[in-house]
Amino acid sequence: MSKKRSRDNYHNETKFIHGDFYSPHWNYKDHMTPPISSSAAFRLESAERGAEGFIQFANPDFDRHGKSPILIYERLDEPSRSMLEENLAVAEGGECAVAFTTGMAAITASILSFVKAGESIIAHPTLYGCTFSLFSLWLPRFGVNVKWVDLKDEKALEKSLDPTVRAVYTETPSNPILEIIDLGKVRKAIDRSKLKEKPLLIVDNTFATPFCQRPLSLGADVVVHSLTKNIGGFGTDMGGMWVGPKKLENVLLMFRKDFGAPLSAKSSWQPLVYGLPTLHIRMKRQMETAMKLASFLEKHPLVERVSFPGLKSHPQFDIAKRQMKDPDGGFAPGSMIYFVLKGKLEKAQKSGRLMMNHLAEHALALTLAVSLGNVRTLIEHPSSMTHAPLPLDAQVKAGIDPGGIRISVGLEKADDILRDLQEAFDCAKKGG
Ligand SMILES: *Cc1c(COP(=O)(O)O)cnc(C)c1O
Image 1 (cartoon, rainbow, N blue to C red):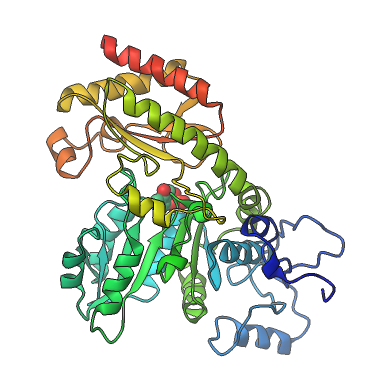
Image 2 (cartoon, helix red, strand yellow; image 1 turned 60 degrees about the vertical axis):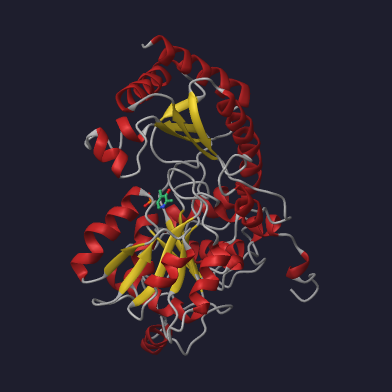
């Protein structure tokens, strides 16, 4: 190791592949590719070594980083997962990472590992559907109060910061309408508050990915991810990740040990070997295509409006330009697009449904599916799909546009996606 150059001389894109260039979790003497370790329990060479392992695990006085772990049981610690955790911490510029079976498990742990009954969190109201459901249905049942505050409104945020508040939670860009939250402003509002114990700023960075945005460098304390999306990238495995300061790591590890849901070795291996190392080239290509699609949609006569952080017409374009940057500082607005079809309630919803069914039947470059961040371009229409059980007026009240469509741009050739979309528009225009 001593002959090698300093790791600091290497770019982030290289670190997506190599992490910190050294891992105590695996011996690379023979293997170039890390293994899928597959062992639920591990052999202990003595009772004393077992005791030492239990003493070290999640012990705030023991810094596990840079040391070979004493492996005991897969739910506690496991080599393939640990290597992914190291590399993701490097990618996000965080001190450490803890991996979970899904994004939702990581989000649940990010709150319940330290917020108690009687305390509260502040959350921005446009959120991924299941996060919204976790916060509105489940947290209150455990006595955790959720205050819904539009984080674009600094005054409202300042007013709601009281001593019961332990966390401020947001996505940026948000699902599905791609609002941008100014993280620096939220950070300042928290710091200006007179609270003795400052709430943690937790950011779901799934839409942007660590290639397009590193929230920890913008003032966040904790970042959460669904690895199922762009970091995994190929849609083969589910996963979730918490990235944050070392002082919280032990609590997260204890929470994961007792509540369960650690990422399996097999599901860790895919993002470690394929997903994260290729993230930057996929994102670059996806963003290039997203820019072309967004410009096409913006000019389309059937489209009321387009929300894409890369368009000057985006209401928070200036904030997006400031905080969504690739590791070299270039503007990186991501690969998600949201647009709204023209027409009043029923008409807009019908146009959306016609487009979806036409695409499902005829298109090869777009796939009708939920999820996002895949090598395939995925399209969905919340009003006639995920939110179909809600009557139209209730949808509008919940912020769902009857003609709103979300596209997650993949790696297909842009012209093919454009042609398939144009045909679907033509079908909607004819009325089926
Ligand atoms: C998908 C998603 C999640 C949940 O992740 P899962 O891996 O599906 O549990 C959370 N937040 C955002 C923004 C997502 O897109």
